[in-house]
Each structure stands twice: as C-alpha cells, then as structure tokens.
Image (cartoon, rainbow, N blue to C red; front, side):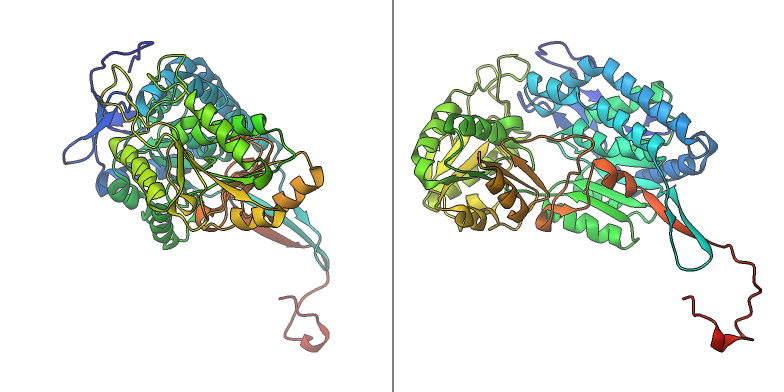
Length: 509
C-alpha cells in the first residue's frame, strides 16, 4: 500500500493470510473492514481465518522449523541474516511509519520515533545468539555435566492494536535469533504493517514459513491459534481476560507462555520533585499513544503538600495538547482506535462523575475539522479520586488519568499497591534512598524513577498478578525460547554392577 504524505482517501485493498512467503486467500465468510481511526474510512479488508487456515499456517511453520533452509542454518549464518533483516527494516522505515499512522492513528511524530528504534531489537538478539554460552555444571563424583539448548519450535503470537510493529518486534526478533518460527495473529484493527514487514523480510531472504501471519478476530481466529495442539510457546499482549482464556487453552498442550496483559500504572509524585517537571512527565505518560498503552500513567498519586499545584498545572498543560490529523506534524494527540474504544473512554468519564471524582478537564469527544467521523477524545483528568472508585481500579485504555493525594511514603505505597495489576510503576523524587526503597516495595514488573515509558531490547519487560507472566526483551526472553537438555557423562573407569555390591555403593538418584 502506497501511503501519500497526507492521505485524503485510499482505496481499500484486499489482503489474505501470509503463509510460505506470500499472501494466500483465507476465510470462508464475510471480509472484515480495517478502518483509519482518524476518519472512519475503510482502508483494507481482511479475512476471518478458519481453523483450516490456521492449521495450514502451523504446518508451514513446522516444515520450516524442521527443514534445512531454516532449521539447518548454523548460528552465525542466522545472526547475519537477522542483521540483514534489521537493515531491510531500516531501509523501509518511511513507508512503515506512514502506514502505521494510517492504520492506528498515532501522530506521525510518535510513530516515526517508535519505529526507528525497532531495528535495534533484531541487532541486539542477533548479538545474543552469537555470544550464547551453554553451561558446564560441577556435580558430585567423576562426571562431566553440561547443557545443550535447542529452539523450542513454533511461537504463536497474538499482537494488539496499540503498538502493532513494536510489540510484534519484541517477540519476532528473539524468535528469529533463536532459530524458532512464528505464526502471528495481529489485531484485526491493525494488520497492515505486520503484513508489510513479512513481505520486506521475505524479500530480504527470510525462508518461507518462518514468519507466517493469520488474520481475523481474536475470539475466533485468535482462540483457534492459542489452542492449536502444535504450538510450543504462546506470546500474547492484550487484556487480562483475553490472557486468561488464551493461557488456559495453551496450558492444555503445556506450551511456554509470555503474556503482557492489563495495567493501571501508579505514578508516585513526592514533594521534593520539581512540580513542572512532574506535570510534563504526567502528560507524556498519560496521553502518549492516546493513552492506549498498558503502561499508561493512569493513576497519579501526589503528596498532599503539592497536590493542588500539581492538579492546576496538569490542567493547564493538558489543555495545550493539540488534537488533530495524525499526518499533521503539529498534531500531538490522535484518535483512539475505534468507536467502541471512544465510547469506553467516555463511559469511564461518566463513572468518574457518578463516583464523586472532580473532572478537571476533558471527558468528552473531541471535534477535529475535516475528521468528523474520527474517534477523537479530549485528554481527560479527574482529581480527588479515591481508591475504591472505578476510575482508580479499572483500566480505561485511553487519554485518561486520575489524581489522588497521599500523606506519606507508606500511604503512597498503600495506594499504589491497591490494584489487581502489577505491570509498571513510576516514582518522582530527588531522594535517592527513598527512590530505591519505594521501587523495591511497589508491586510491578517495571519501575521508572524520574522517567516514563522507557524500554530497551536488553531490559526485561513484563508484569505480575493480573498483568501477566513471563518477560519479553533481555536474556530472560532469549533463554525462554529454548529447551534445555542436561547431558551427564561418566568419566570414571571402575566397573559397575549395582546388584553385586549394593550395600557398599552410593545411591546416585
């Protein structure tokens, strides 16, 4: 799909699944519409894959995993290929970030910044593949014990709409570097850049079947993929309930699992931190990506002595954010992904009113000239929010944040940990000892001190409790794509006969 710099209208393209290095027809029912969330226009149509379609993709992946072209490739050759794929990704960045902006509505400046980092994920994991070491383990007696690691096989990956390529690449890079293969089910809202990346990688030399894509709805195609008997690992980023359903299905075949699910990030702002800087981080953390991130800064917990000042300054900052056409370089906030998601955000604004919170700004749909059918919401701030309110406890997934006062460090931690989620947390303080104390005590898999939304391919990413299991990125993710085999070699010479000298021999197991 060729995307002009500021598209007015685009003909809807018909896409199929991507299997064995090419698009193929799939589905046997009505096609699904893919819309531009800034205009509501249909920009593509995709199939809702059947069980037969998904089985086709799985058989292709298994053949690639066991075949000579990929399964027989040595580590150094594979690392060179993964680096070549990173170069191909980089060479196509301009078309990719424009297509992603068209498909998910993030402002062009945000999309460009995010996608430009992704080639380094492939380079990082290619480096890990080259530097990998297996272990020699000291054991009792005259034995040599060492480990062998073999790729686990087929990784089924269900990706969401909010960061289509970034979340795909966190998994895809390690899949390729470890010698695994993947079948990806992208969100039905945002499949276009995933399809385009598969084409780019095939043209750059990735063997057929290594990176297959099945399209369709999560509750049908995604469910069939997660419960397929031939998957070896399930990677899913999405809602907590979707994770429970998919995880239960994958558990039946004892697949490894990595799931990044819901979040309700607490941001604890202490009174020794500069208020203006805290407000700038608050706006960034809450409204980047239209708040559609699992680590959205959705709960600001602010020390009472600076609470009123923080609320007033956040109100002023929020009202300066420019909402508009995602392809306009001046736009700072784009639409949410769909009419359904817009309505969800507005429902939570109503909950805020009903539960007694104070609306500071926003809470309504935004009108953008020339984009009357787009799914825009004004960035929303509620203050005086108590911990038993729905907007404090439940994930909104939109440009929406709340502010709650606290008295002291213990009170801040009590409020921060009053949540079923545990993905990310953030701390704003100049007190070094406090920063480390609070980071150790807060319930989260990721903690930012005086920052937000930062990730790196080397840094483990994931949560606890209702925010999921497992880790992406880092050596943690790399190691979880292998089966580990222990090899025990007897190096002693004396003859062995347990049944002759039983009483005088040591039991070995």
